[in-house]
Length: 332
Image (cartoon, one colour):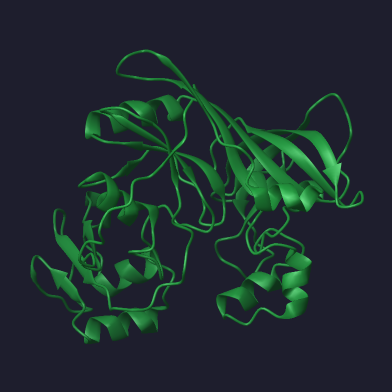
């Protein structure tokens, strides 16, 4: 299949930085400050209180207060302050396009969707600018520091049907990942099966952990299953290139599973050789020692292959994205 760089156009005026939420039945009755503090945890409760005091929230198109009680159907709008966003890699590649679907090879680092410090520097914003998509609908998403295949639906019907195919586990997904250590060299796959839930031993709230299948599932845990196979070694026997096939689609599934097996992903700040690196990264104070231990500035995880059926035409589709040069260099 021909690979074609996403077309560049003259820059559009900056996108307005705002985020909107339509209040659902289960969210009704909450105080506004309670709701945003619990749902959007990238800021503390005190920071959200300061944003409310600065009149950055609108409720039903009018000024909002911390003590306002939310009702079903209310539109809550957050007027995000202007800020300098971190630099990203914006050179995504279009692999396939039709009236319903875009298949892309996303570089790293590049967030798929706005969140935290990122808004204009996202794949979502680039797609709005370069492809005239009023609302890009991601069928699958990758972490900011994960590269590879991302599918985007161009309309609601296609998005729903593609997402149903993923939810019913009818999509074959293959990742390539470089890990620390000499992985088990066996013709059989190594399965990581268990419960994926919050890591109760970590100070990092969003960190997950794979609990072995024979143990009782912790609160909030979900079934997780991934098969790993060693493809090659590298780095003088210190690194391994693996193929990962997730049988379930859980957030952080591959990275948490590999840490459980004792082979953390190279460059992974959260599930890598030391979670304290993640805390220092959040505070923008990584040391030279930290960077040396990470080896590369991104996590060495790449979504390499997707096979599925086009839900509109019924045609079988298969997409492939080659391993990025930075990850190849790791193994040389």
